[in-house]
Every structure is written in structure tokens, then in C-alpha cells.
Image (cartoon, rainbow, N blue to C red; front, side, top):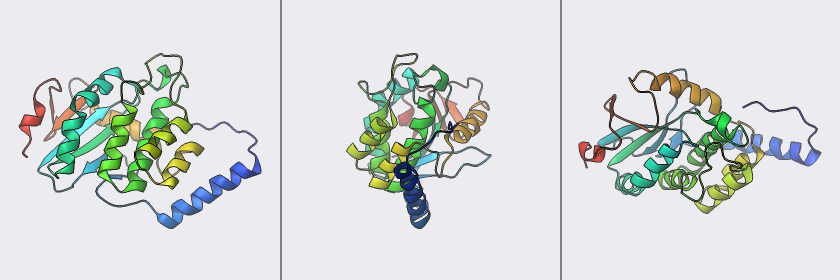
Length: 222
């Protein structure tokens, strides 16, 4: 994320330093829901039991209306399978539409927020509820719309789903501490282009893309 040089009040600088210290002391959280560090092979935010019999890669864009429709349509079923340990979702964010958001940075900020929530909460339930919340019909910004969600609004959503205070603070500060959303998006875009139709949403099962409008859940065990 590009950060413009500005004169920050001393209090803001202290807050950033405090968050950095807290992040170093706590370290990246490990658990069922986690966000992997940026890697050249592409980054997945993994939600669910690593040993789940059902495993999918899900490519989405935070601003994409079709990604939002997909999550709203399948979110409840996905949630139930995650809760029972039957499904693991490797969420792969891209940022096709970042430049079409009102702020010009919404995709990047939403990706970062999702990673921080998952990493700090160590909870698949909290992580998936955050995803469902940012894609909710009355919450997801419109592509090319006049407004999108501010860092404070993203942090408020994190608070509502039960994310820890540190996650909320990191989101409000808005600096890419721990995760670089642009690198994550680039890596996932490279991975998406392995498939004939590199659009989103895209469901991949056993390294093969499936029709997201089909009953793809029926292809999964459990």
C-alpha cells in the first residue's frame, strides 16, 4: 500500500509504535483460521480445519458485486461446513477493482483487514463472519460508487464479529503491518491466471475450477 508522507501528531506515532511492539510480542497467530505470510507462490487466507475432507480455493475481490453475490448465496452453507470441520476454505483475494473504489484503495484495505482479523482472532468463526459482513448487501460498497468503507468502518465490523482489540487497532491505523495486501493480490492474480477464465468469483476443487453456479458443494465430502 502506498502511504503518503504526512506530519503525524506524536500521539499517532506513539500509537503506531505501540501496535508494532504488540505485534512483535504476540507474533502472527497460529490456529485454525490464519493468514499466511506473503509468498511468491501466492497467499491464501485459510479458514477451517486443515484436516477437513472438503477443501476449496476461493478467489474473490472485495469490491466485486459477483463475489458479494456468491458469498451471500453460499455463505451460510460454507459457515455450517466450517463449523462442523467438514470444509476448509483457502480464500485468495485479488484486487481487480481497487482503482474503481471511491478511495482507490478499498480492495487493499479490505484484504488487509481480513488477514488481520483471521491472524489475530485465531478463529475460523470470527474470520468467516468478517468475510460475510464485508460482503453483506447493505455493507459492500458499489463498484464505481461515491463511497466505500473507511478504516474505522472496517474496524467497527471487526469489533462486531468479535475480533481482538489489536486487530481493530491495526485496521484503524491503516498501515500494512505484517501483511502486504498488494503483494498478496498480485500473487493470487498470478495463480488465478493458470485457469482458462481468470475471473472472480472462482471456486477451485482439487486444482480444477468448477462452475460456481453449479451445486459445487455436492462435489465435496461431508
